[in-house]
Length: 103
Image (cartoon, rainbow, N blue to C red; front, top):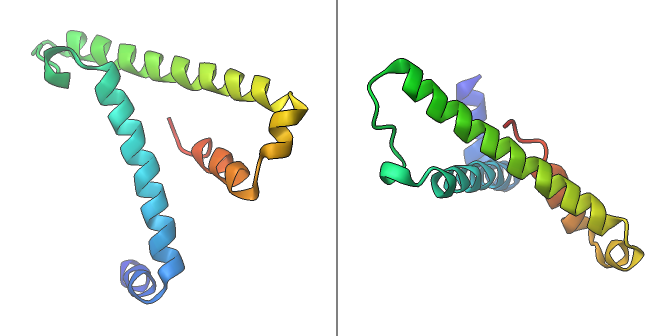
């Protein structure tokens, strides 16, 4: 399966574009995490597993809150006809793609 995927990746430009788009979404997600988790250079400085777990759970909670707030804001904007009229197919695709990623 890996060999077939690699052959398709090398042969088909649309596969490379799709993979790059997915990588960009993940990279943007990680840069957001780095922005939120800025203390101590973004690294967990504690050796105690419980302290590490609290730091990671807190980061996940903040990430989920940001996703929730952004979703509410997008829903609010899309209730206004003037904004819906300005949406293109690419805009809807970007919204669809960004909310398919696992958090």
